[in-house]
Image (tube, helix red, strand yellow):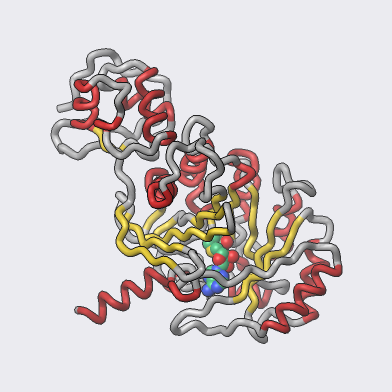
Length: 380
Ligand code: SAH
């Protein structure tokens, strides 16, 4: 039996993910619905669109977690909403705070599985590193998440929920109050965001909505291992900054450490970078380059890197390898990283070395999840 409608629900051809049913009493989570879907959900109870606008404001601008907090709605309305909907965030399974203030959460999103979210503060601002999938299908050799199978794509609700948990933790509600510590977002957590394109797009559009969480696209960076077919659409339809996990300058090595390279080799990847919509000197592509001792860190590698990216408005982010139990690599020596950075710098590219953060709290991608699984296994 479906819910009796007081007025006819709008039919504007938008896919509605909100089947309201009184048979299974499961409430529909409003987090992750876009504005039109929220309107449809609300109108199925007979409410007009302005109610949806008010609810959007309460959820994403004020950050409320219960309908009873929505004081601009009549009590009866709040009660009725509570019967059919909820405002559910991921649960916090584990949380760690590093001595350098990096914070890492192991979260249980409403859709199941476990994911990691990390906040990296930088004086009066900081970046939240958000996951896009439970596990990952790409099996990059240096990545701890790569040892975990892909379990599922995260839904828009699971993705937006990570931001909400972080905002709750730092008390950064309402959205527009002063400058937020949670100023930037990097889609650099577990998973490959371009292999979950639609959900990532929907989630980021909610996060960018100026009447809600309101993080500007200029403060969001999506990192890809190089899924070429969707790079152009990423620029056109989401419009965020792009980071590319390059990590090697020869196809034979990149085939091995980033196996996705076998499908989309370096020249195709760089071609897509040159064509990335909106790329220019004030919106550069970030090339991420992990420093693996004796593998990809020679001076010849640095020179070849410069040759490859010549003409692409870009910077190079050198990432000291963050080791994990059983990892097949070591991090390059500090001196070697310096030399590498100098060569790139001399060619006119900015080449900051990413400061290792949160080393005391399993900061490598996928490490907290792996560690938690190990502890559970040891207990059983
Ligand atoms: N799939 C996407 C986003 C997730 S990985 C991508 O590949 O870009 C995000 C970044 O973390 C990538 O640059 C990845 O190469 C890097 N990374 C993964 N494991 C790491 C480790 N152990 N040490 C340092 N960087 C790591």
